[in-house]
Length: 236
Image (cartoon, rainbow, N blue to C red; front, side, top):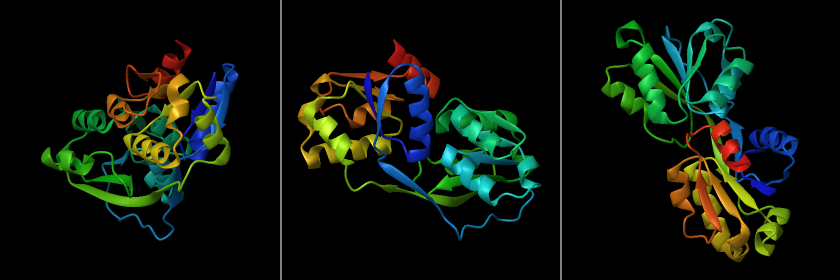
């Protein structure tokens, strides 16, 4: 199949390698670009644990962390974020089920409000209020914005051509924000007519809801919010 990847460059390149190994043709057209905040600073506290809600957050945190901080336990939103944290040198990493609610539940299960504060390494746009959820449980949570995710102004030329001509078999969408921006660009650039042959592969129902009026041939939702589940959906 010919598949359009909409994640930021780094994530799309890694995903492309997996899909190409399975025999798919891929087209990379990132709808978000990631920029670390060079002036970001981490508060100096005796952290009980570090919370990461994206692979980008894990990488930004690793960029600023010293060796002492890398020994602090990390609770990641999902396995991709956990792998990114491990790659940055964090040694004690646990993964939740892929969304902010599962991260809240896992943190409540394995952490203790009486044992110290939590640091949430966040982006400038949040998917859910993790800080508020955990504070409602009695935790002391500091949220520090470490990176910005900027929207693309339009589709890359090859992606626009593929969308307009109906040359795509599928589009992979990993977040409601990306899906919402995809829908905005499809309408603004008048390429919705080319989606009648394509399937939207979505990581969650919230993502699918953002593109359900675009005219896709089908919309399929992963059984759980993980990349493995999404890849299994494509293979099926």
